[in-house]
Amino acid sequence: MKPKVVLLATGGTIASRYDPALGRTVASQRAEDLLKMLPQAGEVVDLEVIDHATVASFDMTVQFAFGLTRRINELAARADVAGIVVTHGTDTMEETSYLADLLLASDKPVVFTGAQRAHDDPQADGPLNLLNALRVAAASAARGLGAVVCFNGTIHAARDVTKAHTSAVETFQSPDHGPLGEVDGASVVVHRRPGLRRSFTVDRLEERVTLFRLALGVDLEDLRAIVARKPAGIVIEAFGRGNGPSALTPIVRQATEDDIVVCVASRCGTGRVKPVYGGGGGGRDLEDAGARFAGDLRGPKARLALMVLLSSADTRTRVNEVLAQLAP
Image (tube, rainbow, N blue to C red):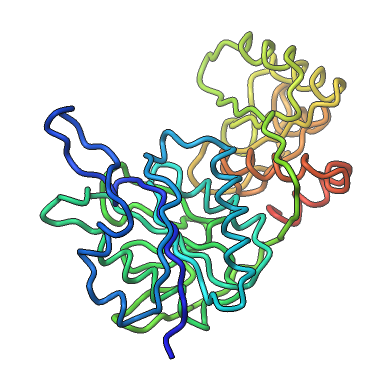
């Protein structure tokens, strides 16, 4: 008996075609259109198809992603479902998949996939990505991995993965920790299991968390304006190990005194932040001003982690402790 896998389609490049009337490529294809290019899907799994949305991931909102994760949990709770595949645009796949991972209440595989080439491209990568994702979702070896991204034959932990290239088919990489495994023909091979996963249950999502990126000579008046609006949290993508200009420190101190959680990530592509440097705006100075540090989480994922942690009274009072577990 073939395992039942639910295909939850949301749009993205995998569902996009060129529209000559508009003169541009747009998400327009439904799940059944994707499956027409993949007749062998029924040989791999007992497939249930749900058209959740047909949108580009660059137009998705946090609330859309939160609603999607709730639907994933509803499907995963069904006894007849072995796994779930989500087709999704690549631009924000790393974020939606990480939110799903943080909120996943089941050990069943949840596999995100998509494409870098449109549905009507003569070398479309979507069909094979989808077939591989179905194989992972049906594999017993994938249970307990959390939400993953399966792309170009490689399986990545949602926490670790990032889109590293604008258009190449091997765009998804896990630079700090490496992939979890691979799909080799019909075989799903898991090389390692993620060790930095935590699952949370929240009824709502605290969206009032802002991401601010430092650059040489950036005007910090914009950050002061953000602090004045009293968000729940601010993630600062700082230089290197987690450093900034001297003028940043009093702004961070003001924010933390106003009960705004400030979290420092790095704008570098790999490595972790650590409060080492002084000099006025170094990481140690920012820590003294009340900032937390996000380990090796990049800014967009640190933002989502804060949204989840600040959504519960329990974890809000233990942000430092729990963040250290998620990103030591």
